[in-house]
Length: 338
Image (cartoon, rainbow, N blue to C red; front, top):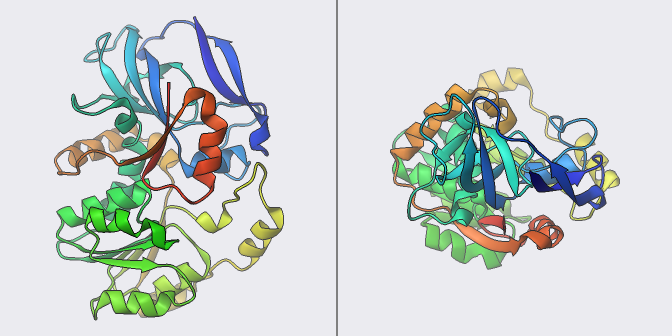
């Protein structure tokens, strides 16, 4: 069986990503073979291709953390995923492919009214948002939550989860042209990040305590958010977009500058101010499949609606999809369809 995969010969430059034919066998015990129909793009994909993600495999690898498709075959020991079942899955890299043999524990059936594009847009952003807010953020009913990158896939899902807890949500965006997305998603406050971020955040809080921050930016935005975090507040770091580069290779001068000037917090001051900073990446969660499935079960009980797909590209447009995703102009999820 031939699979068409986008393979990185080595990390460092997106130019190293090439479409390659690879021979794959049938599914092993506990695996199913999935004909992939859609692939979701994530910041971790780009960081891995740039060689900036510590979890990146050594040598050549296939990027991609999530996909959706149809079960074609199943190995022994697999129950509940029959041939023809529409599924969505997460993988520790390997998602940029048109066919994959995958551990059945990382696949769940798609809802009947979801498209493949929507199926490839749920697991990574949903798990990231839920783990950040509920597991680490200790989200309580009526809390005030600041969500950076509010128009992105994680930001949109974080807002939907927070509102299930009757939270007051403030979303931040990098440009005014993303405002309509936040309005449509029902954010209570909207801040366009800029030099007046402090003043805009204070205005949006309207005197409320700031209980949780879903932090995705870094730098000055991180510092100001932490300052305004209330006692017993929690900042949960799930990304650092300031380190992202729009080109095929990283902007090393910019990276070094941001690294040297990255926020530094004194633990003694944290004790005195009674604040917390937590962080995680989804690869850690992937290695604890029982915990991941527990969270997915909890998420299924919430009314989160369909994932928001912002833009789709065709399989032969993968480079265009990645370039658009890097541009900072995307909203919702960027998906590549097969």
